[in-house]
Length: 169
Image (tube, rainbow, N blue to C red; front, side):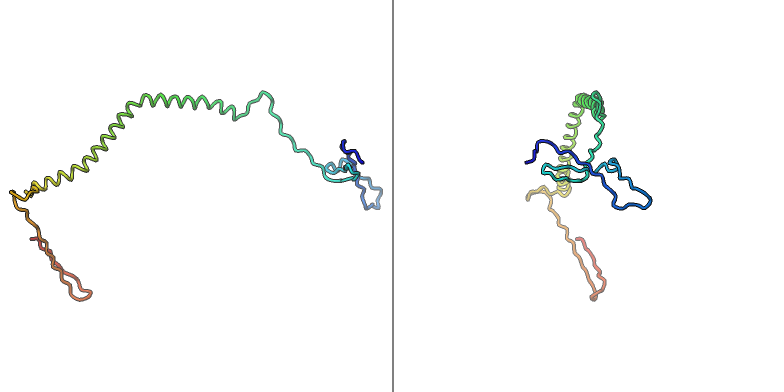
């Protein structure tokens, strides 16, 4: 039974050309010519030839004392953002009385607008009653007159033009 505790030793295969040229001897290719091909003996005794994986080039490690650029930018922006927030807070504290006064003024303007929308029709109705003399009661006061409008419209034929008169009585 083979021992599986140790790694197999790679067996290097040197390819030999199949065709010989008539001009002279052929020199076999050096092992350095095929760096990506290797033969390996497996624990069960078989020899396998195949491509070897080349390790990816590693990214150069950053020196131990260096700081990334994003960290420097963040460190430089942090006091600016904090200072801007503090300045905004101070500005709002100074502006608070004026903002409260403007809020009260806007509510007063809205109340005035609503009162105007309600009061103007009432005032117009009262003024019209005063001019016509009708005070809403049945006794005393002047008699309310009614206006009659009469329309006379005549047309001749199916597609004839229409003529009309409007009489106010």
